[in-house]
Length: 635
Image 1 (cartoon, one colour):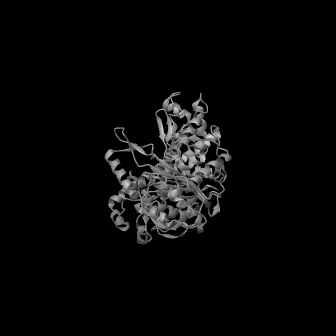
Image 2 (tube, rainbow, N blue to C red):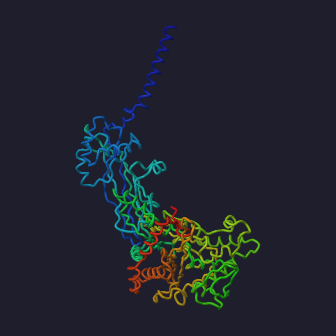
Image 3 (tube, helix red, strand yellow):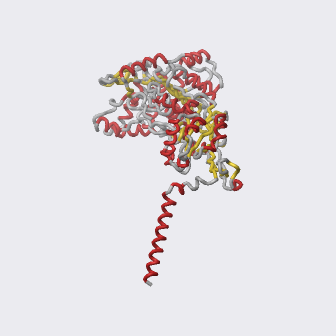
């Protein structure tokens, strides 16, 4: 019995040892880990066709072209692998081979990843014939973006190779070497455009050559192509607006106020999206990234923040009316500006010594009028200025300022609409008053907005109190979108009855005001000029003024608004010089489908501000300047 007991102990011990050994072999030995990879079955991942992009009129703007890629499973490369012969076949240096292999190993020794991307069909034909000789290497086919356009990269964006962060976030879809939208609608509509991957299984012979499908394709998973998207852009209008930005920096935003559809979105300098495709993508991207003077990758329509200047006066009046500190008959006498103690805001309206009402004040852009209104707004609660500023701030924010608008664009900035708490923190409680912050009345001071926010404000005015969230996609798979975020109106905190005064004043801008020189006689337009102060601070803290930014907003026709526009031309001077003519030309082009003011059109399309920009660039390089209260270049 004792001997039998020893036998059982020995048997159990041997069984335990075998179990441990089997566990070690299966879990920790690479030979058996790779059992699935060493079979005669090839798994081919099918990358779906990415959805195409059209404009609102179904003009094709972006589609696909096929490319091939070599993939590698590093652990399958044996010690007898002929590196030199392989490099000669695929056309790379030996150093590149090891560099790419290390990159693949860092992703995974056992999983496939891209070894050489962007192989043309012609080159791949010669590689494919001999690829079976090189164990561990295989190929795959994928689509590459092909842009039929040469501009508007701020709208379309671009695609690029996924990062480890992308893979970690969606490890069930992305693998090393996959492509993902990195900017523009390629990014914001990535999941709509990308589709779903498929899988094909193939049988190989002992040399690794494919000899047929596996199991009569019963295990295959069909790839699902990405959805097409149709933008809200009118491509003809977009191209026209881009031509008007000849040698100019800035942004143009045009929106249909009836539904929030973005008709044009131009950021200048203008980039060609084809620069971000293929082998040159990284080189071109780095080149543009290094340009800190023009910042061409910076979307000035959604990211740049500017003081809104005189167009903001419209909201100063609307806030005053809503808060009850002025009424429709309120007038002020302008004595060449607003003066309060040592505080002076000069006025160049040309109407001095006479009572001015709101319509005339809007038309001639009287600084004194709006400063007086703002002072009343802030002092509505004399013993609690914070409450007055907060009430004003809430009204302004109801027009879409101070937030991201929550649209379908991939970039955006909140801008700055200060509150009473903001000033308490900045100056200290009871240490500031209406005069301290009076510059806000004319759209200067701490206020910063983006061009798309300004255009959205114009929509709210055109609609007399409401707007639709601006958006860039009109249809998915050629079917209209029904997202309530874009189809449901957002109402401001200003009653609709107060808007007629403002609109009348905006029409008078073209009749007796600052827009007389570029008035369109065929269309009734409502507009407002703006001249945004622009200054920088040098190393010794000295303030240096630069040419002002030229700003203009409008909507048209007044009787049936079809388009709302904001234009900002950096360092363009008065609003009537560049931004105003550009805005009216765009409106005329969209509404009439033609432009009759050919002389004005030719002037805008053939003259620009390059000499001004060259001078500013030299100043920045010489003095190591940085911009303060002008354009916020935070990304």
